[in-house]
Image 1 (tube, rainbow, N blue to C red):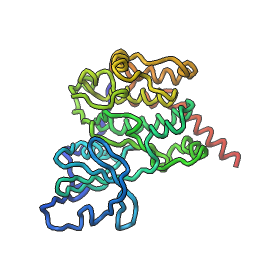
Image 2 (cartoon, rainbow, N blue to C red):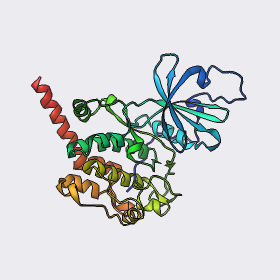
Image 3 (cartoon, rainbow, N blue to C red):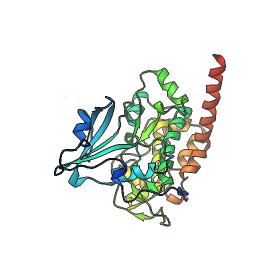
Image 4 (spheres, rainbow, N blue to C red):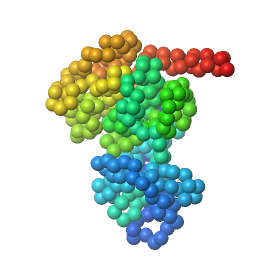
Length: 325
């Protein structure tokens, strides 16, 4: 299922000058160096590719997140792909890079500081969601995927840990406000970590691009396990996330048994799956399909009743609330 590419021209190869002047340890002192612009603070995360700290911007005391990676193992896709996505001027629910600094053996990538934690913690804190709530979350997930696919970028590591909330939700009332605030940027879910992503050239069969193994077991599509990848691989992962939001559990077993289930697209239909409505079940079934060509693309998924009906219902709920005031 083809994705119509945007008319905007992607930036490739990366033009670092569009973000920041890059300095190295051999350069003379520069007012653009990281430590002259920012004060490094506490560590807030650690992954295979680097460590993330809070950093305070000196000119206005605003907090940012900075990912610090070893320059010699740094994958430029972490910078290139978000720039390509945002070059459309229409990207939603995707993090933006604000500054990049190369200082000796370290590269500092400055981005927005999202205080609400990741989507996995959100799910673990609140358990599974009703279909209206799950549809609201999935809509924002899909908006981020559409922003990528329109610019021919496949993320290839779509999972709850790679979606973060802009702000924390301190109460159940705040949770309700989150689901009704459709266009409120303060409540957005934001896609991060483009270390596995790829730009797929126009004209290439996006369902059969050769790839080394990328992504995270449990969320990866069957074709990735067979060293193929494409836009449809992201859509499979959206199906896994939707299943988790609706049931509070993963659709596949862990370990070797789970690999076999993924390859056969055999997900669990036990437990509270049986209690789900037809729209929710049909949405998941339209994504957890073995053959990439059989899955919904991102545009079709956004138009599916599980998502579109959620949007209409929430709009009606907001209208009703406003009339009660």
